[in-house]
Image (tube, rainbow, N blue to C red; front, side):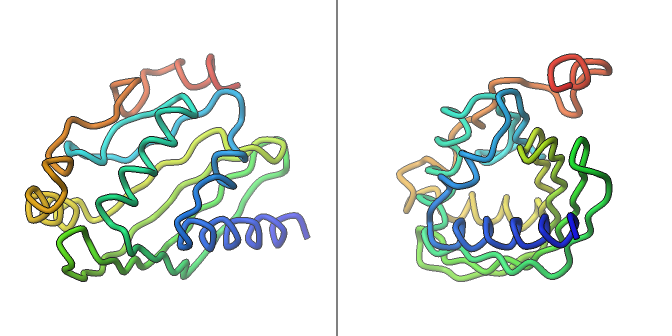
Length: 166
């Protein structure tokens, strides 16, 4: 029953993201968390503050104003004290240059007592790089900006996650 609740909650959060509203996700973050998008580009980096994470979502919506995630499979393991959810998704989008593309990826979410302590976003980085290069002009150069990376280093050094995130 708990796992069904987690699946419903995750689907609900994706619906909010699809509507351009990251606030419910931001409200669901634990006091200490990691928000990670792997790669070496404007969307990459590791964020550990709500402010930087909110800015990351604002950048996402500026670069991909019409983005929609379609969760395909959500696997959940663990109890409320340490839950791992793996979400396989398809994404369709229209970038700031008006070009529509699709891709697929995975979110790995760690939840402790109802709060997200870690979100790891694994996407097709070749597609991301292509979109960022293509939208350099239409984004006013933002797609070529440095990553919002306030805690460089992924994966986190051994011991760092367990020390800082419980």
